Length: 360
Image (cartoon, rainbow, N blue to C red; front, side):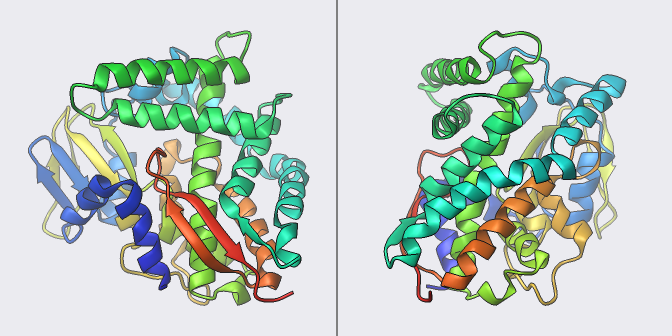
């Protein structure tokens, strides 16, 4: 199967409405639908995150959902010096030294989890990556908890929170389930509560869910497009993260009026407008296949992690983990033998992705 065709099945199988929304206006840099702006162009996407004042806790935004579920102090709802100090602490926890310290933890999981491939057996990459994500998150947060259990709790918290955003008569029940799932996760990452509990919950949710969504999709693309020869190049991980865009859109709400640049002279933004910043389109993932020999410019590839003061501080961690996975798989040149989309996950991803080695 072609790599792009298989990856499209992630959306069609797990998030068909999201895929329809993403496809609806992708030929327009910015498309207004009433009080909602679909933002596809890289320049407008960047402006939406850096030039338009944002209501970080508005209904329907990531920050708003996080605040209502956790009740804690979060990066999302902080401003000014408070925000900069919190981000600096998070960035330090995810910097080069921290990644080097955490690396043996996930490489041990990869060595053990992928070993059956060398014996001619098949391996489902999703449980391997789930353990990798949960164990890494536990170490990052300084927790003595079971990695897979932490990952399961973080995935359930994210999935129920996503369902609580859907309109319909079941929304109140979905919100109750989301709060219960968040409470279970909070009991794992911050059993004593306190002012840092909300931040710990959100770090666990972000670290686990983006990893479990991104790494199996990237591995499937590398297998289907036979990109294993580039596994030693950092450009492969960067390009695969660009085309898979694990968090395909960022919902934000404008706190004040502004203007988004477009080729036709710009699009006005009103206070209260809902902005759907579509990372998948901003980086060209919908039409430009990964090319490690001629990768997208760094400032474009980086957009899958956001930009400016609210960019994801975990970009280094994500790229390093993916590079290690690809380098572990490359000598075996695996192929995909079975794949099933995850219909419950918060982010588009595989429920199972079974591979078999063709070398080694």
